[in-house]
Length: 341
Image (cartoon, rainbow, N blue to C red):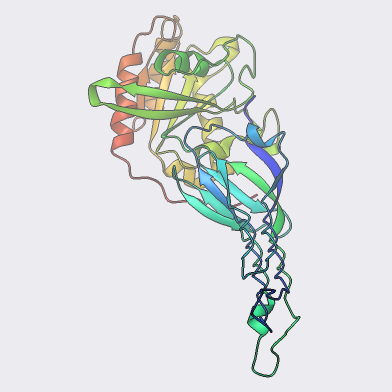
């Protein structure tokens, strides 16, 4: 199961208390204070990890707590620090403070390390309070508490290509053909119930692209019909959109109407999505009705790039794969989207 939302509680370590101690050594009368400082509590960092694909790791780990600093000791010994914790997140994770709804961090790069919660500071030992008039201070300070909070995790997949289409248009079949992903294929609505991410290899260029297959959008998704708009956030950072159409019009569908509905639903979610380059994969061209429908589509949308394909015979699939690479490489990385939840 693909988990793209989770909630966790995190707490940084508390600082250790300072020590009130005095030297007790033979032949050294009035040794004076020698209480050490407490250790600092552990910080909590978010660490970008390209080897993670979703937030499943935090489905059963709702709490992450760093160790507290050790208490100061005599002979001016400082307590041990609590030790920092690196919490690994998949790229594209947004960490939101549940109480304030403010974005605490956004993890975008592998190895990127972002401070989320700061550990408490260790207290001072009584050595710090020695003066010429107070040679035997018993004062010390306690360590401060570490920061804590409950955080909502939202994953926006970082993919090069976002693929959308109606149920049964052939998205899963295409993904099986051009990526290493193996999504479920079936002849019924909503076969895909979560986002599938696959890698398109281009060995001739020593390169690869990431394709995100977004679960079927239907008319009225903006009104929460079907699967709604829940998964569209996964294409906000894509360089291009791949719209998959059943050009044969099976099940009484009209590919021109399907295209209009998809564009409308994408626009209702975020108009900025339509600023991305769009390529239409006209699937099921092996069916008799597909050719006539394709002519109608090309006449109505002369400026849209259309690649006729058949996932059954694999005709046109290499050309589509090449077009995807060409379009993606011509695009700059889109700007970050504003956060709306």
